[in-house]
Image (cartoon, rainbow, N blue to C red; front, side, top):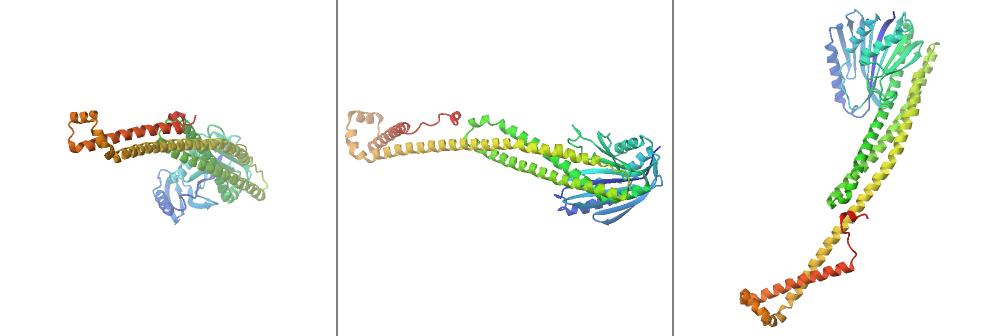
Amino acid sequence: MINLVCPTLDLFIYHLPEGWVRDANYLQCLSANIVEHYSGYDPKYLDFLEVTHLDKSAVEFEGKLKTENRINGSLRQFALDENYGLALNISVNGKFIGQEVVQCLDGMLTLIPELGQHPSKLGQTWMVSGWVENPEKDDREILANDVYKTLINEGWQYQEKGQFLGGTVFEFWRSSPQRWEKMEAESHLVLILYPNQKAMETGAEFHQDWKALFCYRNKILWAYGQSRELKEQMVEEFNGMSASIKGLYNLELYELKLALRNNSLALSNFVNNINRIEVRQHEIDLNLHQYEKSVQSIAKKAGNVFQVSNDFKFLQEFSAIVKAKYQKQLEQDYASLRPYLNILEHLRGTIASIVEISQAQSDRDFQTFACLVGTGIGTAAVVASSSPSWMIPLKQSPLIAATLDQLQVPEPWTNFSLALSLSAIAGLLGCLVASVCIAWFCPKRLSNKSDRLR
């Protein structure tokens, strides 16, 4: 039966620079929490554990498992290009067979502190390595399945296989609904089974190369996932706005102004999101270039070290998928969203036109009202100012005299009452004549809101 000798567990966690560099206290607190975590080790798996707090960005530890096997590890923060992250390394001396491998990995897992979900997290990759003794035909596959289930708690959905320094490499991940669509977070594992101790020691020299390669891979997957979420959000927002277009023609002026404001904000957000998709597209292009360079570097370095078989087609297939699917999908998304932007711009222009028409009609109604009031007041003023010339003859009229007697209007108030009454009548007649003239000489107004764009 296959023996796994000196198993090593690496965990690479990658972050964006936003919210990571600026929060210096987070690094210091995280380091302190890690030390506290290691100090309270689980006695179920460990006999003892010693922790060395090197600085605020690095912790080292060593101890002994219940099986008397020595264990060594470290947790370090690092910077890689424009990204940051954490690198955990745990190795155990000794040989493990069958269920012992699972127990050994369980012990390693207890040494991984709770790091939380930082908002700028890009992704992560597990890597397990060791050299094997007495492997039979299917032993490597069985061992690989056991390792994955122990670390991920679920069975793998997809796998690739290759060769590195004469050993076998397994790559596992989970994805839905398709093979290369929407990779599940924290499901990526690379297992390297070296043929002998010398190959494993040589493979340790590739630690930085693998860390960089996985960084570019996770950055590509993150950028693609972000672009898909952005597109879904934009289509949903557009459909929500489209559903409200028919109701625009029945809105009041203040409601139209609010709709114009909301549409302007939506248009601005839409433009920003399109630009963000374009940024994600550039990120995929850049990181794919870096990924391919890393694959070539690992292949060249491995070929120079040992004259043994190496097969990196499983890494190259990821590049092919990015080119054939991810890049093409983003190009299609960008092209399909441009018409949406044109529609929103046209909609904004339509609402602005409706607002202008409604505002103009409101202003003209006010001007008409002011004209009628001014005409009425002016007419009344003319009549009132000329009252002394016609007041006495008017009072001598039998009809007016009889009316005043019947109403019992006091003599001091007769002149004022007659002047006020006739001025009011003249003002009303002036308003009536002015309205007829306005209706005759001015263009007809829109009769109702639904006629605004007919």
